[in-house]
Image (cartoon, rainbow, N blue to C red; front, side, top):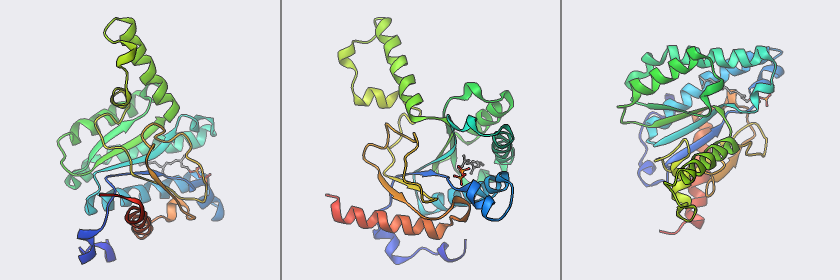
Length: 244
Ligand code: FPP
């Protein structure tokens, strides 16, 4: 990993986020700029994704959540949806190659609309990495923050209906425990490249206190160096505003 491979003296002191969220945006524009089909942008984006996962794990990030496919992305041309699903499939079929990275892989989102084959590969990857002690990687597929909150509300309403819960017992911790990320730290840093300034339904509940960093670079061009820039800005914000 070139220049970031060595531990630097300042690493020990720096303020690292526990949980990073990343919106992998700009794949289509990256391809368009080069006169390539959009799927080539997603393909390069998938490479970037793997590199960033490896890097985050190496520097000791505990949780990384990557937005791969939103509940709104079904509106794209079928060909593009198929290409993204195919990339996910290929990644999961390769998952055994990443075993020595010791990353615990989880999927967040509504699986009911995904192909049986993809769901089976997702379950295999979760099962096979369940004992990993390194970073936890959440891959968001058919994920929507509002959809997640609706599901949580339904599940709690069901428990109230069955008499197992009183409405007054519902609190923030209980809502959190109904989210796909139950038991994990909330994201403290969310990075959105590609020059768009939106949160796009990503981790709505969990991002209440997250720092957002918007960057003017397309996801396929994103490298560990850009991640380091975001981490430096995050550390700077924390030094100014964070109390002990
Ligand atoms: C947004 O860019 C990106 C997506 C909708 C797909 C992201 C998916 C990947 C990076 C591949 C996933 C694969 C793995 C292995 C996790 P955009 O298409 O909206 O870009 P644009 O705004 O420039 O059109």
